[in-house]
Image (cartoon, rainbow, N blue to C red):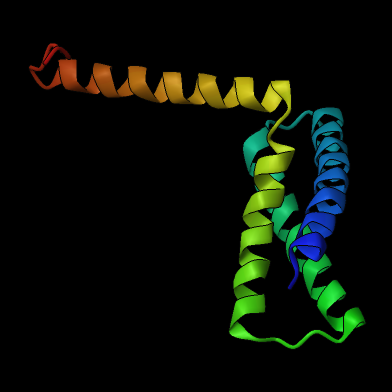
Amino acid sequence: MTVSLFATILTIGAGVNALLTEAVKKAYKNAGREYSANTVALIAAVVVGGLGTAAVYMLMGLPWSVNNIICLAIIIVAVWIASMIGYDKVLQLVKQVESMKQETQKGGAENGDNGTD
């Protein structure tokens, strides 16, 4: 896989993934269900990045070599990260990390640890 092909797949995949993520979020919101935008974006990235790259390989006649399979996995992660570059997703990630930190500190205080080191 060339760098330009990787960049092209990443650019198109990130755009499609962002649209798919927003569509799934809206569907969940309309159904009144709770969801994690990070998880929705990850699942959509696996579908869009993985299937999209596999389709490109097949349409262009690229071999299923070890290097191309590694690039497929890297594209999935890259598409997920690229789709996370939205304000609401970054903000949600920060809030999740903060709440996990607070829960950890509360758990330590309950076990006789005052949370300070």
